[in-house]
Structures are given as structure tokens and as C-alpha cells.
Image (cartoon, rainbow, N blue to C red; front, side, top):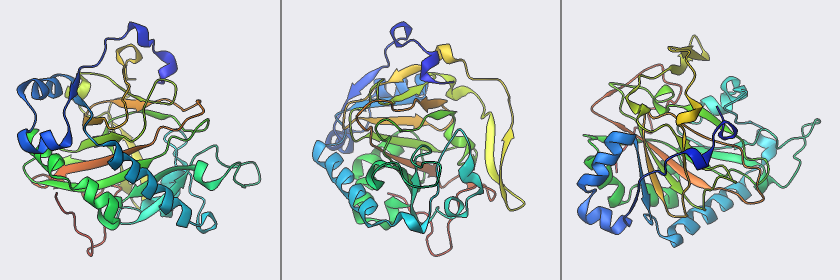
Length: 304
């Protein structure tokens, strides 16, 4: 399912709220916000992050890319080809800061088609623990308050990703549920998705299927016998006609229930759509031993 299969004019507009991080830390979410999250499986909060904080994350991501030497690895991240699942660089990134290229970044002979800074798909997956700028942003009091308000008894910061969604070549992310990839018993993962730039229909904003977070997970991506495998639990396709675009201005936070089906289309526009995503689990739940994302004993999960 892609955004090409949907008609935004025929879709209901998503419910939107406006609350700054400062207000969130002081008061938490209100009854209407709790109700919307329970009904829809997402919560869209505009003006949450200051523009200066967004700019600081973008600047830091640029510095990290600048210091990265592409010759060290040419790992390509794709949710369509799944080429990354055979890549040790990807599999060992749970407690590292690593860089993954766009699928269309290379020409036939393996050379970058354009500048390095315009070729990276994402940085992952432990920015929140290994970089002081991302650590400070990720452990803000407002996020701790929000995690508690939605029912996480012992929130633990599991995974972080910086997504560039590069101009012209920013790749599609197919419809998926985050609990497919980060599974606890019972299921508990929640995504905190921050728009660091405006996310529009043209540059690949998020889309979601409201209310479908009540569905069981349909796939399970995990380790098995030294390989990464995907178990299909329910082969039924997600209904494209139910998808709603979540366009988001810079500074917007979108909270995503771990069972909510969501996706984003390719970026064919001339502007990027940079975003930062933090995945949080409940430490009161058991993190399954066969999850793909692993950490060494020297970096245990921490909370806010």
C-alpha cells in the first residue's frame, strides 16, 4: 500500500492538538487527548518542540554525517527490498550510531550519485544513549510525563532513528506496525515521531489507519538460527482506503501506538522531510529474546 493508492481529498482530517513541551511537562495530556489516542491509535500534537530544538537536532545530524566515512560501509536501508536484513552492520546497530544509505543513492558501479549528505536514509539506533544532543532531547521531562500519561509503568528508551527522507530519492516506508519489529510480552512499544521539518503530501508525510491499533500484529520480524526472518501471522493486506495523511508542521510530535498500521510514501519533491523517532517500551513487560534489536551487557536500557 502506498500513498498513490489513496485520495487525501476523500479522507477525514486527523484530530489535531496544540501543546508545547513546557505545557506537557507541567500538566500532561488532557481527557480529549487521551480519548483521541485511545480511539485513533495516534496523537498529533502541534508546536510541541521548539524550532530551535529541531534546528539543533538537524545540525547535529549533519555533523555526524560529516564525520562519517562512507567507504567504511555501504549499507542500504530499505523496507521494500529488505536487503538490510542480511547485513551485519544493520544487525549490530542496536547499541551503536550507524549510517544507512538510500536505496537509490548508488549508481550501477556502486558510486554515490550525489553528495554524501544527500544520500543517507537514516542514522540509528542508539543516538539517544550515545550522543549528548539527542540524549538531552530524548529525555526531556515532557516526554517522561507523556509516557506515564499513556500508561507506560516503567518506560525504557529502546531505539532511536534520525530519518532524512532525502529530496527526490527519499524511500517509501511500507505499511507496518512497530510491534512487528520491537516485540514485548505483552505488547507495549510506542513511537514518538518528531517532525523536524514540515512533513507534507509532496515530501512523504506519515499516513495511518485510525483505529486499527486494536488489530493483532500481522507480522513478526525477528532472529532465528542466525538469520533475520519475517513470520506472516495474517496475510490480509491493510485497506488502503482507510489511510489518513498525517501532515505535520515543523515541531509537531506524533505519538504512534505500537500496533497502529502506518506508512510513508517516497519523497519525489525537491525538499527533505527530516524527522526523529524514538521507540519506548514498558520495562514491566518482557522484551523477547529473539528480537532483532539487541544490546551488549555494557549498555542496558534506561528510562527518561
